Image (tube, rainbow, N blue to C red; front, side, top):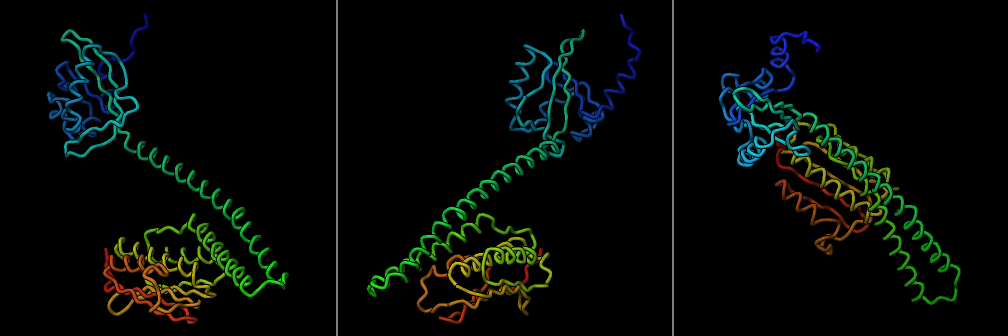
Length: 343
């Protein structure tokens, strides 16, 4: 027989200072031993833990079911992990909860059955796993976006371009067409070009610029994205510090600017687009100005140029939306936020 080279006091020290929480619970569910890490995990002193029901360390919503589970375990005790595959929670003295992994093992003594309970705080591991799953999901979504984007660009758009060229060639190579026939073909070409523009916008929307928490830098990234996906020239001006803006206000302004730029790209036929973010005496102004075809404000339908969405966002901010446009003179969208909300 191999003798045990470690005295009992050493074993007690190993258990007491183990990195995991360690409890011993009797058949009645009372804690009869707790190590130092258990004190740290649960926020109770050892004296407070001793003699307390183990259900005290479990969120209240789980206590009834735990009583039933503890009764079943005491009838067939064995060493095992508790709740394998489940997201187990423990409760601290202050009422806060944390993620745990728990292992159980029976200990038979002259006084009866005891159960050793090893408690490991796995909050950080769970958070890392959740982040890993989120990143994996985002990667899969991005791959699918890339596939759809390539299919639209290399398949649908190329086919539409080809059909447009065929119609254009047919229009100019067939002198016998009547004026009415030429007009209908010309209308078809215009509709096809509009559809191509829509598909181009859909491709751009598959990889939208995201709000990063700071309005100025997010608008700068947004303008660069539109520059990459358009033949027009886009520029951004805004040197003010926007890090103090209330996040909800900054986010709504970002979405409003994206709505305005999307409508410019879809409808304005502009060669130059300027986005300006500046301070006013009474607040903040965001301006999107283009040199495109413009339109008659009196004849514009309620949904024209995304006005409905932009007005809704401006209303949510308590801001004033100002729109200036006329046929052939481009369009200016101004949003006046009456104050500079700060966090």
